[in-house]
Amino acid sequence: MDLLEKLEILTDAAKYDVACTSSGTDRSGQKGKLGSAVSCGICHSFSADGRCISLLKVLMSNDCAFDCRYCVNRRKNEVRRATFTPEELVSLTIDFYRRNYIEGLFLSSAVVKNADYTSERMLKVLELLREREGFRGYIHVKAIPGADAALTQRLGLYADRMSVNIELPSEKSLSLLAPQKSKEKILSPMAQIRDGIQEHSAAMVKYRHAPHFVPAGQSTQMIVGATPETDRKILMLTQGLYRKYALKRVFFSAYLPVVNDRNLPAKNTPVPLLREHRLYQADWLLRYYGFRAEEILEENAPDFDPLLDPKCNWAVRHMDQFPVEVNRAPYEMLLRVPGIGVKSARRIMVARKQSSLDFDALKKLGVVLKRARFFLLCRGKSISPLPMDHPAVIAGAISERGGLSGAQLEIPEQLSLFSPTKEDQIKCLTGQI
Image (cartoon, rainbow, N blue to C red):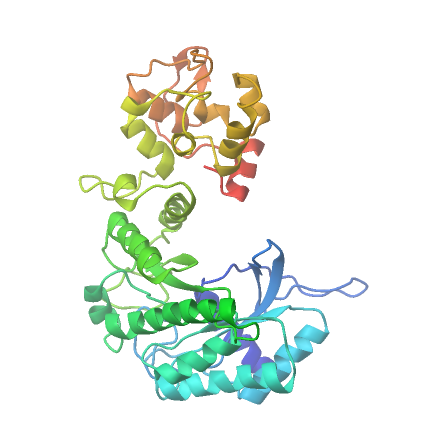
């Protein structure tokens, strides 16, 4: 098997790992045209200063010794198998970098033979890149659960970011669908990476030339929809991971039915993309808006509303806390108003020191009045066209497509997700909800 065949197989197999952002583009070259975007493993991530960087996203091997039932690379699944040697992977990375295709490497692997053997081969790739080739680009590497702690430690000294995929939201689901994995094997390297980051950060304060250890932090991935856990269960686990292991990101992957198994959704089952989207929105609330998981989803309503984003859903369930006076409300309360994001809340805090704000001023500051008007007062006045004591009516006004005609609410026969305006699209791209 030649190198290109291996590259096609192992970059295609890597697409199921979403612990970084993928471009998803497949556009071949054309005679007389410049460049191409054939999907052979180029994905996009973001640096700490906000730059978009291109990474070669690839598996070291898809010849897995494990038999995880949800995985396309499971031992019993009939797929084409391939394995890179460390030299081949180093050569590809350097060649792609010299051609300006990539700025770094995202390296993962199936478990070949055992966890230690796989980690040793991945470590060899990083050693050759950093020490022999002098490669200083970004490297994200997956730690293999169950590998020797010394190997994980050495990987962390070469990598910018590491991740350990938790995969499934409960120990029961792991034992059912991935019997060769366990909660302890997954959480142990997470704790090791967390402790290593803390120790090396402390050493950097004391010693100028102390070695870096995973300076970009660690992340993880969870599969959504393969098992029956509720959204609340997944969100509570996410919150716990952030608090206990100081993760940079938790990524969610809507389950793609790629294998037949009686314990998994059938292949014709719709992919739960909306559920994945809602989890990302709630994750943003946890990290930047000061929400707790138990606030976003309650025990008596453990799943997300398909028609309302998590912040709007919380607001309409707590109408007793609204409307808030924008000229006096604390920053923490402004963040809880639908239509006000982190940036616009900060702008409000600065602007209202100079003068009292009205609704026109809020619009100029980036507030989405289409949603915020139901929850705000400016100088004691409201522009809500609806009474504030009917949360269900407010929820319908925010979620429906048709919107308001004067003071009347037009309820369509079948509710659907609203068509976003240009203003909404900008807010979605910047994470403001």
